[in-house]
Structures are given as structure tokens and as C-alpha cells.
Image 1: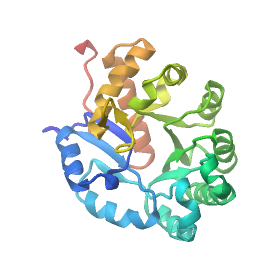
Image 2 (image 1 turned 120 degrees about the vertical axis):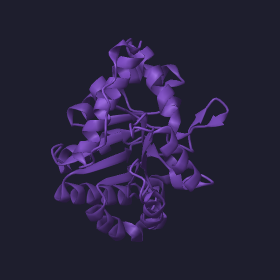
Image 3 (image 1 turned 60 degrees about the horizontal axis):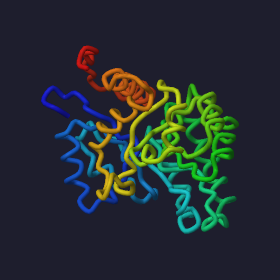
Image 4 (image 1 turned 90 degrees about the vertical axis):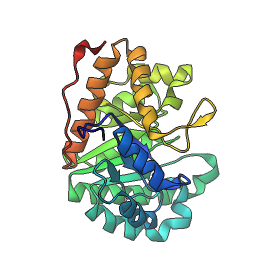
Length: 267
């Protein structure tokens, strides 16, 4: 946070634990005022992430099981369900229909169903969801197993169609957007049609690239500027919208942070 404790940006999907020096990244995020949703790929990684984030109000740790790892980590599903009872944030979870892991798709659906059911039972849970080549099934399961009043779903690095995005928005989903999504015409076209009141920022760091460099959580500040260009609004207006959306998501999970009013005259 900055000296007034004000957030300067929000990264709603970052793999802090997969950086070479997670503690250094966490410290820099605090200095830069970046609020981070630190997703995990296995349930066994969650406790250590919680230890790193202890006493850091800007780091929110999510319990997860990445769909690519379901086949080898299937036995950890029970542990993940237990963690969802403790953690308001869940991720990275979801489905992946890529040919290389299609053999685990039934297992993925089973575990994703259990995750949604547990989150629905507990209520007040925010999920960061992977949906590569599986958007239709992901949204169908969200619609059938959750109530948006109890479970808030964020589709991370969404790559479906405009029609699928509209259906997901109708189901109550948000969309977290990173710079890599804006580096091609298809991605920019899709983002242009996303409702501004459902957009959040992310990096998927350290997996996404900006030019020749690995993305870092503070890159979300630049992403807001690029989103403003795509939607044809000022950067200040876009920042106001993104911050309002972030506040809604955090409030849903029972997290309150100081938000200073953004001066619309800044542009």
C-alpha cells in the first residue's frame, strides 16, 4: 500500500508462489500498493502461501487445484474441500479441454462440481476459474450449482466467444483481464464487448509476458490504461470502474479496504 494505505491496483490472478522469490514479490506489491489474489495450483501449496502472506493485508490467498493437475493430484480433492471451509478465496480451479489432458476431463468435472457445491454451501466465496476450451461446461456448471448471491465467480483469462461471455455475465460472472489478452485483435474485440461493471485486472504472473519480460503484479496499472483505450473512456473513468468492481468483489468475501475517492478531473 502507499503511505495512506490506499490500493493503487488489483491483480486478481497471480501465482506468487511460482516466482523465484515469492517474499520479495510480496514486499514489492506492498510497496507499490497492489492488492493481489495469490492463487495456488495444489491444495498442499496453500498453507505456505498463507504463511508468506501473513500480516500483509494486500495479499489474499486462494486455495486451489489447477485442472491440468487433477489427474496427478486427484487424491488432494478432499483437502481442498476442507480448505474452502477456511478460505474465502478459491483458485485456480475449473476445467481445461485441451487435447493433452482431455483424458482427465471427467475427473476435472467431478472435482469442479465438488468445489462449486462446497462454495455454495459455505457462501461468501470468490472463485478464480480457468476455462480454456471448456467455457460452455464451466458456465453450465456455475449456473446449475451456484447462486450468484452466495458464490462470486471470476473467469480468469477468458478466451471464449462474445456470446459465451454474455451468457457468463448473465450468470453473474466477472472477468479478470491481463495484458496478454489485449495483444491481439481477437482478444481486444472480446474485451471490448465485456461489460465494464464486470471487469477486473490480473496478470497470471509469472506465466504471461509483456513484450520480452515476465509480467509482474504492478503491470495491472498499465492494463487499466489500455482497457480505457479499448472502451473509449478516460483512464480515470476506467480506474474508477475497475476499483468499484474490485471493491464489490472484496466486499462479497468480507474484505474491506480503504478506497480514496478518485478525482475525475485527473485526466
